[in-house]
Length: 489
Image 1: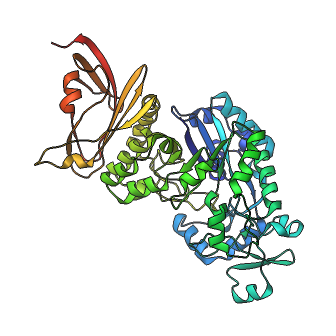
Image 2 (image 1 turned 120 degrees about the vertical axis):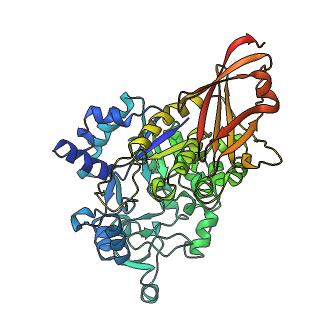
Image 3 (image 1 turned 135 degrees about the horizontal axis):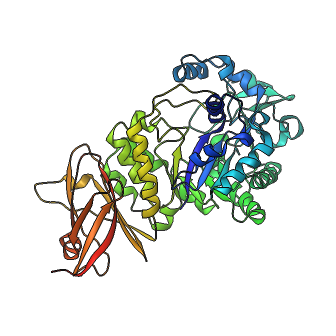
């Protein structure tokens, strides 16, 4: 199953340059660093932010007080030299020469492949930089406005390339100040999107499509009304993705998706979609809410990308402090579907760094947390084999603490695993009836892969009334279940 490690490429290379005392680009990353990246349990690396950043977008960012305030909050000693512009204000889907250019990326991809890792890169379908060539060469690919629009709403429109264009946006927030809106209905844009994705597919093994739901016909119509022109008979992604897969059949396609549109985007051709709903439940709700989310069918579950942080969300160590952070990590690591880990998450970084910045603050490493992740990732890779099945914990009339327990099994021809997480701030006890065949009459050993502790139990008990578990607040366990003998006495 896909396990992605997201790396902020520009910041990472800067930190490596300091570490080694020389400038390091993608083609010059030492082999020992690639060995560090190739963590047990990770099979895919997302190098976030490799494309050419826009000088025009940077100039806008340097004038935008709301952005400057966010930069100062994250990096109190920030200077203008630390502000590189947004990697999602793209002038062209070409690797920035400052990062090593296309040759450097090719060398990085080869290093990853030698270690059994795939590479995924971003694609930004919704907007481009204000100095992108299309503003002068292909204005039909963008949402255009008028001089009256610009005078009436200068925050929503921009003059560039001799035209007035709409600034990029989604329907729920003000426009982004540094980008120009593409027209999802445009035949020319759709053809160009195919070409761009095919080109990315020649440089990487997968693509993460930024804000993919914004290009869907119904969402686009809600955002832009009649400005884009006639509604196409075919949606954006069903037009684009099959044509890309003709050239790159094995390309991994991941959609950043919100507003419960994961199922629709999966039907439109994506392999995995962000599971933002699970993230919100883990952050703000309880085990009952998480359990309800996991009632969806196995096919739907396998198409989700689980996470507890990424570059758009606050750091997990800051908003899920202490044991809750670890409990959430055990859950997302052992569920079906893909998993996303964020650079710095394993070390307990707490500062969410704006993607405009090329440098982050120095933060102490949380060594116990790093050791925990060092155990969790290989344990999850071992456990997630075969068929996944959620369990319903049971309790007692005078003890409802079992409601805080999340549990599921993984069943493979050669292995059985059980995951138990107490997603509550108090101790919990529960019974977990296991539905595996042939348990009765045998003795079993449960080995917690996170602690190496072992527990011997009778198969009859595991079947009925079920395994008794007692967990501390926010405790998680990943058990390998093995038979230890023949008939039990």
